[in-house]
Image 1 (cartoon, rainbow, N blue to C red):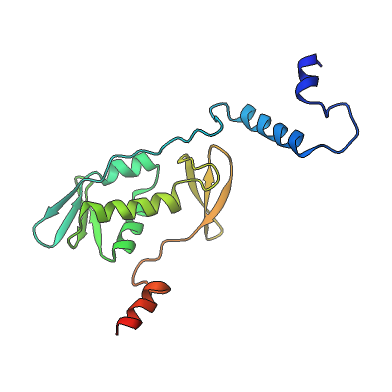
Image 2: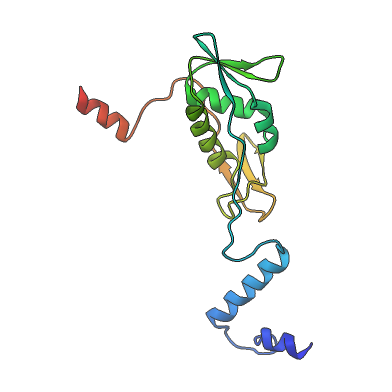
Length: 177
């Protein structure tokens, strides 16, 4: 063992309780060794191209770059499709040009907000905020597993159809009536 190692890790040859600062330093050193691209305090931003939304006639909307966004997020198109349709409360399908055709008139901002919720719930790791995650199904439950920090958490399955309004919005509606 070199003198430099003894200086950085004073606890190695002693039989005593470690101080909080020693343990914290040790954990941070281990994290940096296992994640060399991790720099303390630096946040990597997750930047994605905005959805291209085009109106088709008066009653349909086309999400032109739907497949590109699925590939960028590393998610199955049917998973993102189910979430979008459930959140927008409508129906739709992917056409031959890989565009999502949605029944109803929706603006780009609406699609963007739904995509943000999807990314927060089904893409971003809650521990390290990394988008490098995968969704695995184990015994009827879905788990989000981070490729960077190896943390995992369960995620809700996507419920399609009518969703009951609860909480603040329901109380507000009752007051208005």
